[in-house]
Length: 111
Image (cartoon, rainbow, N blue to C red; front, side, top):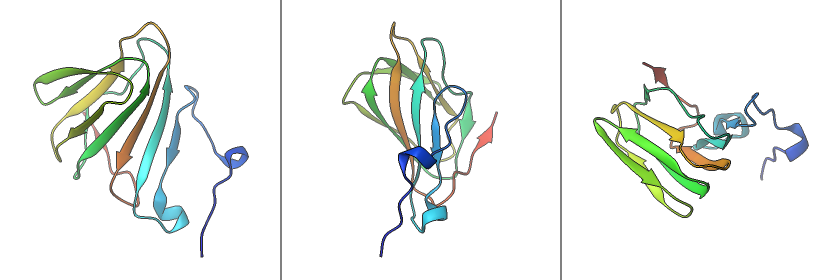
């Protein structure tokens, strides 16, 4: 058996980001599909699990704990559980990024 969330049924936020929680379709994984303008990103936050980012297009700066790094297309960055983190589009074009949450629901505490 399988469940499908068709593209035309997906609800995207004002910044074109899709929030998907796998629990709704019986899955153990959730994610954000980010489509951000230059200068946009997330606020500092934490999760009780690791978060994995997959950069598809653009250039992002990731802050994890007290460290920062840049991510480029094809890069995969992982933040440890319970460590404050965020990202920002620091490039000149749109940032396309997948933020993987290994949980059926996204559990996030904004700081």
